[in-house]
Length: 508
Image (cartoon, rainbow, N blue to C red):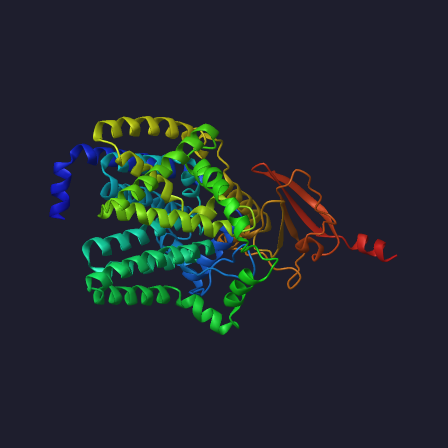
């Protein structure tokens, strides 16, 4: 603590700049969070599970299903959500605020790593651009399990770097914990395992040469142990359910029609578009073609420069950092190129910090004044383009408030009576409404197990024809007629009741 206070006193201007960067990052991530946050079916599903954890003490051993095959993620994200939603009792905004806070902490980690590897200007550039990136802002403003992946990946690389720097290989425990967390956030984070595996092999080689590898091996065993312990709920689930996840992963990599393919030429052809268009273009270039191409070139420069220095046998933390970032980038891009389907922004979460750090490495090549000028120019141009695309400049979606208002309306209408519920929507399912209806004290009965005498249908589509709709909850309710129709928060809400006359007509 004393050393930190001393450092702050000696670096007041840098502390002011860092505080400003973190303040801007916090503002962009927390501003009107309840109005802009996503709260649809997935978020409602997660909230219902967390409610079961807090109210009914039902602890899940698996997390959300992945988008491919019979593969489930670990339950860690549910446990994380339970902390803020336990403090701010069952308020889903608290879970989103947790993700926003994690996003700000990721900015701080970017600053720290760029600072110790490449210098002050590099740290200012990398952290500022990460704070202003419209993609990182977007994914920091919703409660969704893939969103903390960049933070945990940065923690993992921090643990490895600290272990190497301090020779205290117990820091590898932080790497093991962080990797287990990242893998539970999104299954594509499994690509981190070969990345850190390669870093481990090269570090082992150095330790063997120095004949000081016993502490390294102990740290490695400790890291693997905590990694397995973090995944234990998922492992036990697999043992109890005929290795469901294991079989799903095997089929993912072995079946010809799976979403992963091993055609080396196809994969190599996809790497450049993924790097330029998806990674740089989305996370840094704000989809501006010229700026994206320019940044793509600048990001490669530190790797080439680091390779040049390695031939001159220049060693140290700086050369290791460029080497580690190169492994992280190359293996990560190759791994994601094996994926056959569309590459979305959050798929790149595990690799997204790399270009920011490498761009900082580019600035670190230059002397202070030149580096400062380059830093200011890049922040101004790239930051301006990204700020134009931030969600807070768009109209608020009010998804949370609308869901709450509609749920309150239905609860007020039904009183203490039982009812069934259905949602008609092309892009949503009913878990968000189910969460608030349950929270407000009248949980809908399930069709066809428990059919009541009234069915409330919320229609988010432009064309609404609930009577005779093929939706399971409506069709299972039986023949209906509309008794009441209201518009609540801009959405049509129908009350349907049974129509025995129509049933008799059909039977005739």
